[in-house]
Image 1: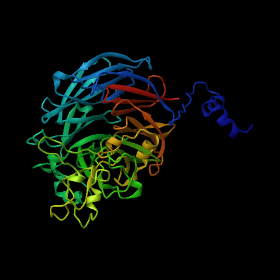
Image 2: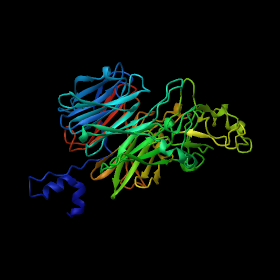
Image 3: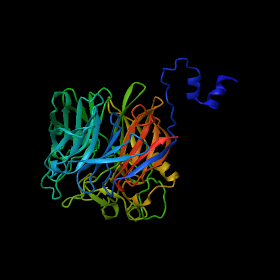
Image 4: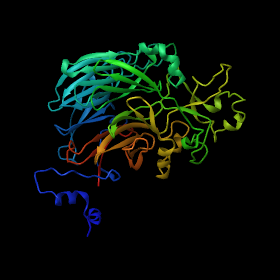
Length: 500
């Protein structure tokens, strides 16, 4: 029998063992990224009891943000995985307001904690993962919404969203804080005033500054951070503004802001279902340019080049005194641009779709010439070095959800499947992307080793409204196999997945 026919019959891992004469060499583990199944689950409470998780390989503990009743971080012992033991939580409620995010590196847990008054400066709490003793509390900008360590553990970076109060009378500046762990946790907080002079050019490419009476710096709202493999650059989504900021961690400066443009739903490859009242699920072409407004972002490498992948959730500003959302049916449309406006605005057509009322009156005559929607309903991949778009998922992601029979038509008038979380991990030497879909309770799995042509692998069902998604490589997981963790905000569960 030839070697060619032997490989499928006995498997690559077996073949490698047969051919190996040195029994001290650890054999590579081959896992099938199309075969993830749920292997464990734990219920931490109700809504907001499970938001973001981080795993410490040294103690084999998972740390999960739980804001159901007060600000705590649940501690889960995975040393006997798939058995899960819940340990006493870390209670940080006396140190501030809501906990938003966690990250782990080198036996340290970083917790992003907003202030009791969320317009005030928040903080990062650093805790020893073994003793759970507090090491340091460091002040950062207002509303630290996400925290992450750089891969080398030298930096802790926070995206400080700086949201306004409900009345929009207090609007702190959005910022990014860089904490130097090796320099006694010294902190540098960066703001965006320096880019105000570039706003006209940024706006031409879809960047938005539009909060009531907000300055450029106040209006910026950093959401999520990804750090390059060499720990020198951070990439921060500015969700409501529709952009990505590039940060130089070494010099502690903002290098540039990349506007993200819009997605044209009138192109067949970008077709979308825009009505929840048409009694059908059909991806169609509509005269809408939707803003990407990404939430999570992840950095990965393929063929020696760095890339960014974004989950294009979409997010509208919705406050007591300011709500930018409007149904298309409520707007006055320009009759020359939309000669079929009456038909278009029917609820079974475009009438139910939520769009922004802050953009679209191009000639300032009181009617809308362009309709701008919320969210890309998919994911995008960019070249990290130059910010150029390499791949946009178009309608493909939602089509996979429809094919699986889990599309929620009630969300068609809003942001569709609403991709919120994304992470990339290496499996068999290939980068595999995991995209959490908040409105269909699922994770989409793609091979992104060819970033311009991602290959769909599978959809994994999660708990209700997956918020955080975590990939743990085989060499760090509690049982030596790749582990995927979904923290589900809607039902307070944490679910664990491994390959067959």
